[in-house]
Structures are given as structure tokens and as C-alpha cells.
Amino acid sequence: MKIIHELSSYTTNKIAAGEVITEPLHVVKELLENSVDAGATKVDIQIKDNGLKSISVADNGHGIYLDDAKALFLRHATSKLKDDSDLYSISTMGFRGEALASIAAISKVDVSSRQSSEMQGFSMTQYGSKLLQLKSINRQVGTTVEVTDLFYNTPVRERFLKEQHRLRQHIADFLENFAFSHPFIKVRASLDDKVVLRTLGDGRLDHLIYEISGEAILKKLIPFDFSIQDIQFKGYLSDISLSFATTKEMRLFVNNRIISYPLIKEELLRAYEGLLPKRRFPYVLLMMQTDPSKVDVNRHPRKAEVKFSDEKDIVTYLKDNIRDVLRGKPMMVEQSISEPKVNQVLTTYEPLNVEKETPITYENLIEANSVISEIKLDDYLPEVKSQSILEEREALFDNFKVDHFIESLQYIGQVFHSFLLYEHEDKLYLLDQHAAHEKILFERFLESFENKSLQTQMLLVPITLKSHASEDALKPLASMGFELDQFGDKELIIRGIPHLFSEDEALTFLEIFLEEDRESLDLSAIITRSCKAAIKANDRLLPIEASTLLDQLKVLKDPYTCPHGRPIFIYFTRGELERRFAR
Ligand code: ADP
Ligand code: MG
Image 1 (spheres, rainbow, N blue to C red):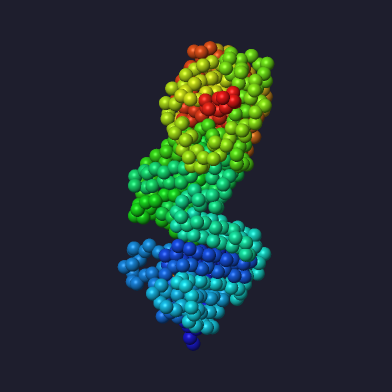
Image 2: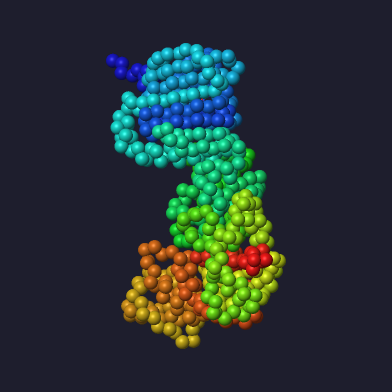
């Protein structure tokens, strides 16, 4: 008896389809990759019913020879690889020659194409394993592939019909990433006849962001471009006034492919540490370009995971560079943190809308203050608005990039026991002394904690605090420089506190720590809250104290925003003041 037999090509293709094409998105992806491989500079994508009805991709690539038409749907038929030696120098996206064969096994495929050196094109229809028609036609150079009735002969179709929302989301995400990966391809995509994506293909990242993420987001992004060890890092990142609930808006690309690189993502998030509210994530578009030999690619069906050869050094520099970029624009802070809105740029001017009767030491300011509340801030905006976004950004960049900026500030005085005034070049700066103090405590504490260099100062007289905290819950405190004993199950005896804190500050810290929800212990949030609590309002500062504050601020990693992400400095230009006086 003989039971082993060769499977028909139809069956093997169908099996392969089960591996290559597990949802409509994969068809979109394969078709687009073929267009890219064909050198297209323009692609038009039309998808109906999330790909279950039809997927059509038209490109202006080099097209297909009529003589190759019949081989299109053969498994392992490709124009991209001749023999195994080519395997090591592949630059195209596809090369296995199984996509079209697999797709045709589970759908109806119409291909029409004209090769750039041929006068006529062809059109053909393949349904399952059958070639239904092949004829020559007149058409422009390029290729159009239309896939209909996807999965018609497979059991998964039923399931997909119920998951339309998920399919749509996958397709939409992929299309965005595709557009970002190919800045020089003009992409147009529509879902159920509605255009969802349109890019210019002019290679400009800012135009891509404008088209894909929108103007409101673009306005809050800072451009960067630097190199570390032959790797170019280029892109945009959000300033601290823009954040999201997930890391979905953080996109990393290596050599124009979307990739996942957890270590780099982590490092980026670290650069934002203390700048964004708790559990919020930035917008990052990071394009990395390097010699392919410097990256290890671990291909994953969805997203390649890559690794640079000298990863460790690169990652450290990356974080520092990103921090610098973020510091470059510290004062453009808006009050609204989560919802991006255009034209709110000047909300930071609010502190000047003060009550008239408050005593002010600074005469010029008294004059200014008495008229300000009647003038709409919008009146001062036109100049800024008319500038292009990039110019605006560069101007701000120039202003604050300099690290010795703080040193060049000239102290004028204190107002309301809350704000310190400084002059520098043609600007009047106001520093929020409480935000500054809070930030100083915060950074110092966090840093000592991270470096495990928190020393304990013993108290002369131990303090007793009421607490029901378990021994486990108290454990982290020891590593923070606290020395304590539990007394019974209601009392806590504090014998030593971190040397950075005064007694008052330490107690506030402890109270907040003990209140926090143990399940989600978020150290930086606790530190933020306790540092805030440790600051006393309305402190009169002597000039020498004011200058000490500035000295302390100067050495911080980020002296421009408080741990809650609010600005520490704001400024007015001479021009703005003059306009308010109607000069
Ligand atoms: P692969 O891309 O791995 O070679 P496919 O099954 O995706 O395999 O495509 C088979 C062949 O069909 C390709 O090698 C290419 O020659 C041709 N082809 C497919 N789509 C296009 C297109 N849009 N433009 C030009 N040629 C194409
Ligand atoms: Mg292919």
C-alpha cells in the first residue's frame, strides 16, 4: 500500500497562505512591498470592508513584462533573487516569491501592468489555482493589483467578519507607518471610498507629521538631527506639554523600516523622566539611518526587532542628546498637558494678570500690571503666528540651548514673595521660586536615590508616627536613607532621615509615602508629591538666598520645568512690554 503522495500546488499554496496571510493587513503589506521593490514613487491604496471585500494597490513602478505574467502566481517565482549567492545581498523587501501565489490561493486576484520598456500592458485574473483570463491592454507604466473575496474558501473568513474593528485598526496603523517609512513615496489611501491618508512624497518629515498626525501635534514637536557612531538620529519629539496615554505615538525606524527596539524606547522615556505627568508618554518619531551591517535584525512577522552592534555606548549618548533637545525648548510650556490645542502658546503669561493692590517692589511692573488684565493676549500673537512653525521653533531653540543661560541672568528683585525677576538681553524673566525649590529637592533626591548615595542623618530625638504599615511596605524606606523601627503595630519610631531633607520635609515625605497605594508604588510620584509638600509658600528671599537658589538650579539636569511639568521660568520680550504700553 502507498499512502504518501505529493500535494497539488493549489494545496501547498493554500497552506502557505495560512502562514503568510493571516489577516487582510498582510495582503496590503505584501502588495505595497512589491510596489516599493518596483521603485514606485506613487501608490494608491483602496480598501473596502477592511480588506474582506477588496484591496487594490496601484503603483507607478517599473511594471511587469508580459512574458513574466504567467509566472506571477507560481510559488517561489521571483525576479528578486537569482541564486543562493544573492541571499546575502538582498535589498528588496520581498524575495521568496510566495506572496502572490499565496494570496491567489485564497482570493480572486486581478493584475494589470505595463513594463516601462514595453508599448502595451496586460491584464490577468487568477482565481484560486485557475488563470481565468490574460489579455493585452493599453495602460500607463506601473502595476495595479486588486484582491477580492479574500479568504472566500477558508473557515477564518467568518471570524474576520466579526472582527472588523480590529482589522481596520491594524490596517490604519500599518498605513501610517508605511507612509512614515517611505517619505519619498506619494501615498494615497482610502478605506471604503473615504480618503484616510494622503502624503506629498517630498521627503520632508514635518510634512508627513502634518498629514498623518495633524497640525496641532506638529506645532508641539521639536526637531532633532544628530549622529552617534555613524548612526544618524533624526526626527521629532514632543515638548512637555504634549503626552499620550500609551506609547503608540512613539515610532522608531531603522533604515526606513518600523522596528521595535525596547532598549531605545526605554532610554527615550528616561530622557522624559520628571518632565511628563505620571503614566503619560511622549510623541516620538525617530528615524535611524546606518550601514545595514551594523544592525542585527531579528525578523518578527509584525515588526522587526533590531540591535545595534555597539548598543551600550549608543544608547547612553542617545539619552543625553535627547535630554539636550528637550532642554532646548523649556519655556514653550503650555498649561494644558493632555489635549493638544493650537494657538495656546501664550497661556504661560497668566501670572502677570495679578490683582492691582498687591504691593510690588518693582515700579515699572506696577505700571505694566495695571493695564494688562484688559488687554487680550491674542493681540500679541500675530507676529508669532505668521512665522512658520519651524522658524518659531528655531528661534526658541537658540534662546535656551545655552546652558550658561542661567548664569547670565541679572537679578532684579522678588515680587509677591513668590517670583524672582531677572533681566537678560531683551527679555524679562520671571522665576517661580517654589517650583524651582521643588525641582531642586526632587532632582537631588532622585539622583541620590538612584546612585544609592542617600546618607542618613540621625535625629537627636526620635520622632514617633502613627502607622499601620506592614514591615514589607516599610522596606523601601531603608534604601532611601530612613532609619525606623516599628513599635507595636500602630507606631513607627523614626531615628534617622535622609540627609537631604529637613525634619519637616522628611516627615511630610513619610506621611505621603505611607498614604500611597502600595499596589502601585510609584517612587517618582511620591517624591514629586512630597517635594511639593515640603515647600513653604510665601517665602521672602534675601538677594543672597535668591542667588543660592539659582546656583542650585543651575546644576540640575533640567532646570526649566518643575516635577509636574510646569515651567519654572517664563519671560516677556521687550517688544511685548512696549506694545502693552502702546509705544
Ligand atoms: P517576491 O516579492 O517575493 O518576489 P511576490 O509573489 O510578492 O514575490 O511577487 C512575485 C514577482 O512579481 C516579483 O518578484 C515581481 O517580479 C513581480 N511583481 C509583483 N508585484 C509587482 C509590482 N507591483 N511591480 C512590479 N513587479 C511586481
Ligand atoms: Mg513580494
